Length: 457
Image (cartoon, rainbow, N blue to C red; front, side, top):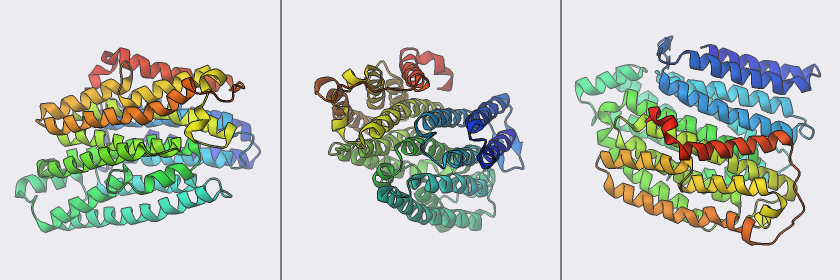
C-alpha cells in the first residue's frame, strides 16, 4: 500500500511544483518517488501482504512492479533530457507517468476483479492522454482518439465479462471464482464460458494480441516516440502480468479447457506480427508489429501452465523491456534530429554515433532472440516451458517466427553499418549516453550470465 501512496504523492508533488515555478525540482521529486516506491515494494518480498482482501503484494506482483518502475525511470530520464526546455507540459507529463504507475501496481497485485478494472482504467486513461501529447500533430491526435475509442470498446467487453462471472459465482474475488469452478466443475456453464471469453477479449486487447491488435501500429506510430516506448513496455508488461494473474488465481481449473484457444491466439499473433513487420518502412511501425509478435511468444508461456510459467514470463518481460527501451530511445533521438522514423535515417549511424548504433544493434539482437543477449534465454525459457508441457508443434512454429523476425530486425542495423548517410556527429547529453550504455550492458550481461536471474525460473 505504501507503494501506491508514494507514487500518488510524488505525482501530485510533481504537478504542483510546476504551478509554483518549481519546474527544476520535478525530476528529483519524481525519481525520488520511484526509488522510494521500489524500496518499499522490495521490503514486502516473501511477505504476501494482503490489503483489504482486494490486493496482495506477493513476489509475482513485486517483481513486475520493479520492472515497470525501472522502465518508468528510464522514460523519465530520457524525457527530461530531450524535452525539458521544449515541452510546456513537462511537469504534467511526468505526473501522468507516476499516476499511471499506480494503476500498474494495482494491475499486477489484484485479487478482486474490481481492482483489476480500476488498475486497467488508471493506466489506460494515462496512456490515452500521453498518446495525444502533440496537440498540433494530426497523427498524435489520431493515435489518442483511436486508442480511446477502441480501448473503451475493449473495456466494455472486460466489464461484461466481470459481470457475467459475478452473476455465475456471486463474487468478484479470484479465490472464490476458482473455488466455484473447481467445486461445481462449472467450466462449461454458459455464463462462465461467456464471462471468461469476454474477459479474455478485454485483456488480449491490452496486450495487443491478434485479432485485437489493429490499434497498435497506428497508435504506436502516431504517439510521441518516447511515449510509444513506455506503452510498449510498461503498458504491455502490466497487462500481461494481469492476464497471467487472472488465469492462475481465478481460472486455474478452467485453464486446460482454454489452452487450445490460447494456442490459436499465440500462433496467429506471432505470424501476423512478424510477417506484417517485414513490409514496414517506418521503424516505429516495425517495432509495433514486433511488439505484437512478442505478445504471441509470451502467450506460449501462459498456455504451458506449469511450475516455470511465472518465471519464464517474468524473465521474458525483463529482456523485452530492456531491448524495447533501448530501441525506442534510439529511434526517439534520431526522429528528434531528422524528423523521420524511416529505416533510411539509420544510414551511416555507425559513423555519426557509434554508441547509438551499437546499442541499437544489441536491442535488435535481443528482440530477435540471438545470443549472447537476454532475449535468447527469454525465448529459450518460454520454449522450454512449452515443450515440457507437450506443446512441441507450437514451439516449432515459434522458432520459425523467430527466424522470420531476423530479417526486419537486421534491416536498420545493416543500414547503420553498410549504407552511407549523414556523418555529422550526433551530440548526446552525458546522462543519455550512460543510460543507453547501461541498458545495453544489462541486456548482454543477462544473456551471458542468465544464472544471475535463474531463481526466477
